[in-house]
Image (cartoon, rainbow, N blue to C red; front, side, top):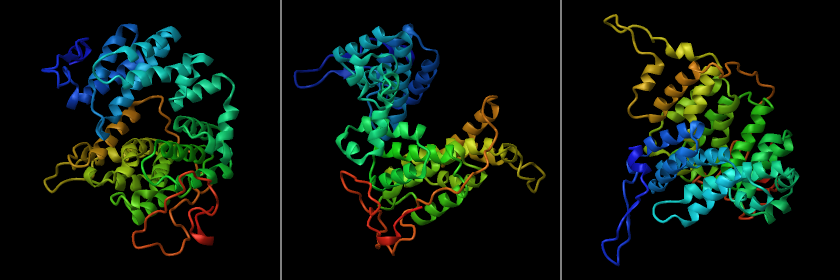
Length: 401
């Protein structure tokens, strides 16, 4: 397959003046193979692999939810190789992408922009600014992280810096460096405004989770996750309007969760893929890795690997991991078991679970609030959020900690 996808001949001629050329050998439903190749080349690829990977990327023309992972993998692989090859090669890739005809060139452009964050010069800042990771890397290299910190901490500067990659870079830096309750409270207020899909909302949740995990505020995390799932579930789109909360909980469990988070993560993974509201997909897709990390970190891997007793005929019952591996209707459980096996075999994976230093902050939607409306929807925040303490308008009992 890789030979077909590596070909420079990307298009067949148009049949007539009214039709467009067609991409030959599109990756299509075989995108998992392309993703596997990208993951390998991210680590081991060199100059000889650039043309192959770029031509493959141009043949991944789909843009559905299912294909987001392969596009991410292609961007990451190409950016890693470009960065290894240096500034000149990265600039050449950016120029080449702008001149290519046929197929999808977005991943190539995005990869080159991301690599410029690592190898670019101040003159490349505008290109790096289109990608949050690149912009953060560039600002660190230029010694200008105080500008990003100000964007996060100052509402006025947040409002005047409306480019989403810039905001995302500021949030990534906050996740790395902020430590206090004020930052957590600000992130919580930010999350309240993200009621529909938002990449910036993802970074708000990730920053909150990073701070909570680093500060050891994980006591009661499992109960908080269970409380959320009981109250809001993952199926109803309107109830999913508080999706950043669930995602923040899952990422926190991934980073530093204890054994108490296994049960709610299993409950999340036990949902049918067709029942997941689109806003909850990121939490759903992250749950296998979170569960696997928690399982190995908390010393539960052996327990889940053992037979669950004997059948009536004396034969051993399968272990919990075996049941998960053979589950044909809950793909997240299968993914979780595979990841757990990989982490258990990884000699560098940490198996030490940190004891909580404090309780997880209470960010449950509507905690202590008056009765909600019949739809129980999470109120939509202002379009240019000011992150006030009186938003959402729950009165004196709105979410605080």
